[in-house]
Image (cartoon, rainbow, N blue to C red; front, top):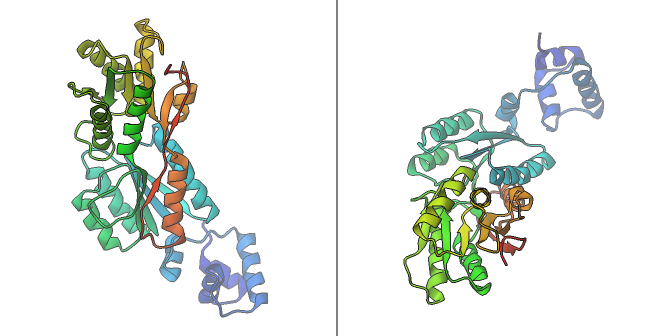
Length: 325
């Protein structure tokens, strides 16, 4: 049988209201009463109900994180930053994996509303009108992570256009002129479109106005394999490939290895994100480094330490390893 706040009050010979004030650090009791109540809470093993406490102090010490894929390494690094800040500030994190249709996102938003979370971090997904309507009714702070929207919501991200532009410039400076791209999901406005536009602009600024050698995947390892195959079939002249994620880049390396195409001697490969996969790849992957952990940490700090009002654009950098000569 679970211990209730009434059991604590009865044992301490005080009112339920006094026990509640002690739990929520509110005034109205002596130091002796506080020690007595806390001692009995410890002896009985009483665990306060977060929702019940939230009705009093208007906080449940819980935040929600919505993201489209919790299994990939990008998400793992971002979540590590979020959870470290949450732990430091004594908050719990509810992680919600969404889907492409949007139905699950709406369902999770309703669940987070019912749980009265204190804030939401919305990671790497486009903010649709129906999402924003639900969030607006919740009247809690929301921060976008690795995405932005047409709505007045603050975000933490890198400049994907500039990062892609710099990756292609890096390859150009290494002497490559025939550069292909394995892009993310076609039509994706968050990560795919700005990276593709950065890729195209870097080539145009170099005076290369040929048809862009671009194929599309979905940021995953498997589409790196199929994308590399398609790219070589359509554009056999390419000597370097820029991939819109490390996972796709590692998939591309796998395909090239199986086809006995040497990296970087015959073809160079650059990834995007700087996840642990890049460091562990064979050969170790040159990539565009996003500060993923700092991204999650910064967003959580914005959410929990003050009501967020401004945007944060973090710096990317080229991480040189062994897939480009």
